[in-house]
Length: 234
Image 1 (tube, rainbow, N blue to C red):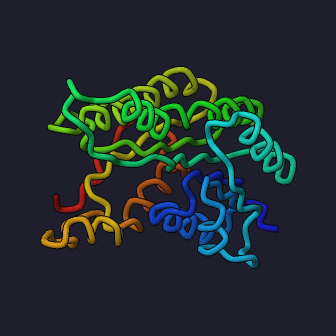
Image 2 (image 1 turned 90 degrees about the vertical axis):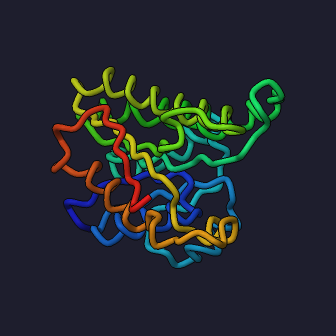
């Protein structure tokens, strides 16, 4: 066992960014706890022989499920050292005056409320362990509103404000909390949705993973509450 290995929890681990972040931390020799609501995708991506602590299908809005997964990780390796909270997503919506409760709740669940149970389980363990790092994923598109993006921008903006607030609350306890703000991530889904765009201008998942790994390292020990643009050439 690598004595310098950390226990790294990654939410949304089955997605394109989740896979890149998992590879980055695995290359360092860290123990990975890969969490996603899509268990089939987790098994397809990582397979039964993956060298991680666990691949766990769970609903991040279910506090009991989340606590069970985090408690298992902490028991196996004596704590939780890094949380990369990637779970979230994008959806165009209606004009603000036509926005339905269903659209707003969907995006708030996806981008805001999903943070709360994992934070509630992870933060006390980080405090007890003397510190840690938390990295969330905001969005450049949340810096201001856009047509038919009101609910999305509001939800990602709320996540970014929660990240900043957590940092203010936890930095004196040795926990660095920061956020990355990508523009367009180069994924197969985005290429299919924007066939006329130039994906070389976008952010590669691996490049975003590098920034997140930096924020989860001791080299970023003086960075607290930052929302860092990661925009590629856009």
